[in-house]
Length: 284
Length: 269
View 1: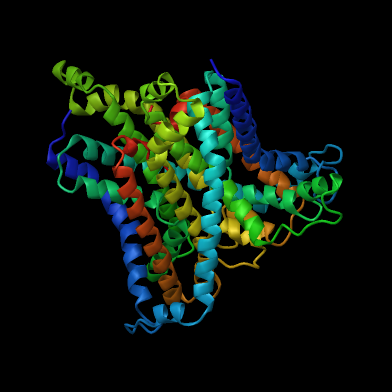
View 2: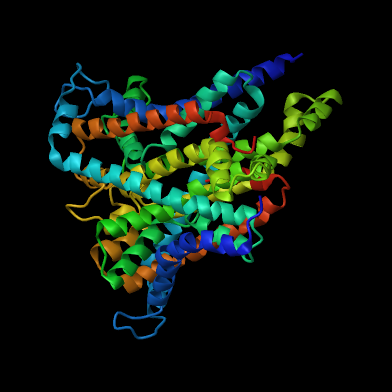
């Protein structure tokens, strides 16, 4: 049923007005504020301050480093799970269990998930007591509140996103191509390396970019898992807005994070557009 | 069919995958387990079994207030998002309005932009207009971030179904209005339910957005938990956290019943 454009404009009017008022305009406010000083004078001072001293470049470096490692580990854990769900599991029941296990963490807040890791990684935590029980170490290793614990926490948050994105693309691969590989005498491993994996690459790139974007902008996990000892971009932004009340400088930091994210999204769209069916696999 | 090395490879894959799935499950299971400990401090394995920590947080009205606020925000933002999302989806799929692609992108953008930036922008904007740190500021923010979930699933359902059903209804003399309620809406219902459940959950667990406009008396439960976890962790925190895990379990079960979990996870099927 087609809708005449007059009616369509009426239907879309209110929703669009809402998004304009509470989403688009606030972003413009932030961008404008980032180019102004506290007194409303136009200036690049906020940006020169970010790049000027060594503190913020350091924060950026740490943010990117931790995000990159977490993305790689998420891929290493997430890809096999996605492959298993799509190509190995035969029964619908087992597939459902897998999806429940993947979605459950996704439906739990980042605080609760990080809290679980605090219990596991602490000095008396399960990880340390297990290591000691096996005689691998004679005293608790400091894991919690280190960069390692941030990476573990981030990875934990990100794996479900990787699994769902990669599974979406794996599902669109024509099974007859895999069968052709097997029929022509290639082993399952060789077929995977030469057929399935290359065909799934757009999903890998898309998943990695989604996950990396989420990691770069993560706030809760680094805050909890670092115990405040490591500062990432999102924490700096909240500090400016939430406790220092320097909205203009905070705005410049937010714009910086936004620009990075937009570049990543542009890359994401570039790669996903190259796969004809990839668009359907786009999800959060 | 499979050679020995393929069998070994498959066993390794199986071990690796289930280790990965355990990695996803264990932290949540640990929280649930320690929430029942009789000790005054967190310990795993838990000692004994008690519901004391659940009773303690349920007796604390500040937690109940926080839960109430979160439920109210989740329900209100989902309802508003549905009311905005359905007409938007209809206009996007069923018209040739110019700029539809851009409009669609505007609605879906909150999905991929950093929530912390959306939160900061909303605080700054609300401060400018004088409604910062209010229920309104929290609510509009939640609507903005849950709208994409509704829109996406409704768009998918609208694109999928057989439009001749609507034409038949119109041919048989039903108005466009009653055709929508009698034909279109029932058909897109599963997609709508899935989108609404996602929206409820996304709002219910949000910290990054709420934290900017929250106050001491206007604090959704995840924000309250976040503030608490940073200075103390005890079995009561575990009990509250476990409570939110039970909510997640209920949500996953409802999704499976109403829509089918595998369809939700990979909607391209």
